[in-house]
Length: 228
Image 1 (spheres, rainbow, N blue to C red):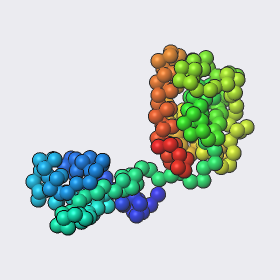
Image 2: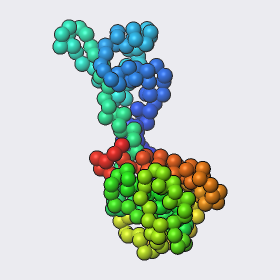
Image 3: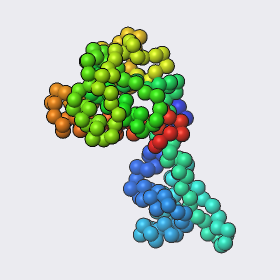
């Protein structure tokens, strides 16, 4: 990765601009509407010269633009550039066909991740294991039922029977991530603790919550125009 790429440099500048509480407060104040520097100073109880300094930093970072009032041309209004904030998100992953979640036995984490992905994105997805079990774990089926996920109790499979060249392979357990070093190599690794080791409803709920959060974060980077 080129750490001096224009995209990274621009994002770093935005992060730096937002690293001051006063500037972050100004961005918050502009999130839902435009305001003049004087109005910002009054709202935030901040000296106008300090507002001017912070606005310059935000403007230089591309977060804020200024425009003259169409009424009183002596007045200037500040406007937030939402696209600049959107640029802080990680760039999209390219060359992704289908998403495939992999764990050791394909009986819990990978199954739940695939069901969550399908529910969240309505796109093609699969799951597999390096040493697949005969059936999906009963507690995985139970947590799926509680959260309205569709799991087939007998739908386990081996990675070599599932993975295609253009798949985005995600290892959702440490063992699978470390074992798959040949042609099938995970592009991403989610170190989700194995709920089967503990074998309680609470452990499976924790795994579900972890996977759901990761799926929500990944989806915008994979699905063009998809859910964010």
